[in-house]
Amino acid sequence: MKFPGLCALAVVLLGGCALKSPGSRSSEAGNIPGSWSATREARAGVDQAWVKSIGGRALVALVAEAQSANPNLKASAARVEQAAAVAKIAGAGRFPSIGAGGVAGRQRQNFLGQQTITNNFGVSLQAAWEIDLWGKVRAGAEAAIADAEAQAQADRALRASLAAQVSKAWLAVAEASEQVALAEIAVKSREKSSTLVRERFERAIAEDGGSAAQVRLSETELAASKSELEARRGDRERALRQLELLLGRYPSGEITAAARLPKLPPAPPSGLPSELLLRRPDLLAAERRLAAAGRRSDEASKALFPSIQLTGSLGTSTIQLERILDSSSGVWSLGGSLTQPIFQGGRLRAGIERADAAEREALADLQRAVLDAFGEVEQALVTEIHLRRQEAEIAKAAELSKDAAARAGEEFQNGTGGVLTYLAAQNREIEAATSLVAVRRLLLDNRINLHLALGGDVVLRRP
Image (cartoon, rainbow, N blue to C red; front, top):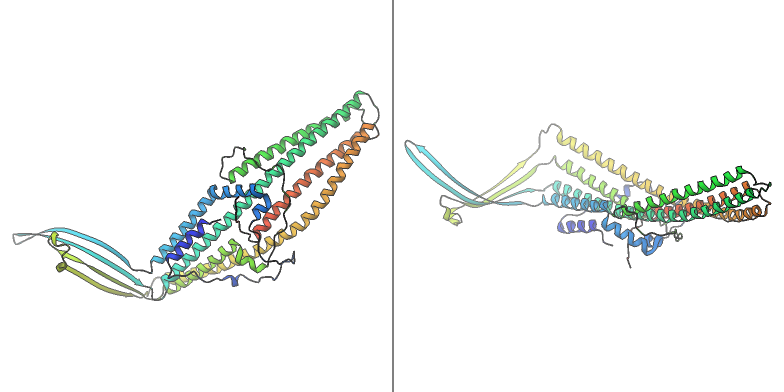
């Protein structure tokens, strides 16, 4: 997939071939561990097709739609173009400025009773150039290039974040659909149990379940199940509309989405911690901001040095309009100036102090971002370990509770079991089934978090 921001930036960099991007300062990010503490796996590479591995072609199509229509991404692409234009403007200061002009005038003079009227016509070509002897203009231009690169990386980060949001919203719809289906099953199960309890009451069976209170209890459970079903349906409608908003669509709730959660795909390779500095767009953006701050610090220091300005003009000056382009009426001028700052009221020194402080801030921001990135990977890795264990136990509980509910129903129908045991078994079966769906959704969400934390790019290969 093409990234508009990076393309725009490449045009700027190619246009200013005499300039170069500031060198990398990622080595100043702090201490980098040799491996992850949550896992010893260190296979190189990151799954760039993680969207498809999570949700297949359907999810790939939705993410592609979001990346082409989402307003936030359109705004981000515009910011990249603005930053590229600023870099181009900054680089223009290294070249002479040339302009053309014309003049026309008419003058009347009275002297000792004599009146004279004169005309004056002329055209000229002016040029001015500040020689960047100390590299001050270059430093500012290269800082602007680094800013543009940082903005392009921020655009990449936003695109990956949007892909994750769309994927999670799609999973939320799938989970909500499964929860609705489970709630519908629960209502049918409650209807069946309520009917059985009422039949026992009407037959005036005195054993465990022949009282009016137990009839009311079963009806209460049925009403609660119906209420839960409506709540689940509401969750699904909200999830559908949230997904549509991310896609840039009107939130009508008419989008078609998955009815079930997909299976958890194999875990991606975690690579080495040091590789994050080369992969994650937010870290690359922070490093570029540090590089830009360093060049601006150089620019502020060089403002103390003298500036050399060359000016020149070439043109004609005549009193006759028809001779305005006559070379015999030509005039020219050439000049130069040298300016050394002496007293600025502390403005230049304060500018240096400000630039140095901004560089220290950018360095601290990079170190914080790197530490946060390591934390996100470690948390995602360890969270998956415990969620897998939790899923296994809940799956076991769901299977046991299903069997317990079936046996409790048989015993109640045979007259050997109590209504409270029967209803409690139904509750456990419903709770375990809904919990199992919820934890599977958490596993998939955490897997998306892991892909983002590892710096997995979003490369869409649409069918």
